[in-house]
Length: 181
Image (tube, rainbow, N blue to C red):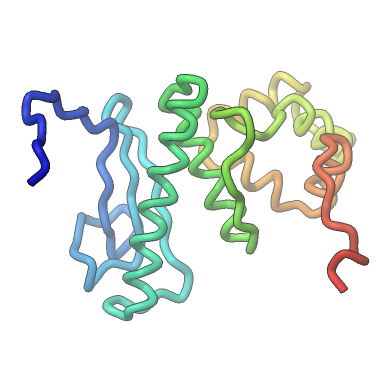
């Protein structure tokens, strides 16, 4: 029999993880859920993800929910433990990971610990160039929007021209086509 030390202090949870049947909905059970909610206890900020085309009670939906909760927790822990990232950095990282997943890209852990992997200043410069005369502000204005407006950075990166230019300028290379043969 293994001797278990029961005197160890339990680590306090930093977030609540819930299953939901609708965006903004109440916590529910696995059989009726089609989404997850991650709520930071320190700030009350929330991240929700609804599984596309989910069918409540379906085995694939239940497995996907478990995986989504795990992925959100792992990403938050990576940021918090890697560089001591605050709640905002943790939620931004979760948002970025699920953005990638929604675009069909599974991202593994970033090297070097936590923090966001998006250079907001570079992205703001690229966005301003793309907007041209329609830009409503300078680099600082758009960096602030990316920081303050939930989902704005995701919206910016949904534009293919901006995303492609960002990848090019940030040195994020894609896989060579001949390696896919």
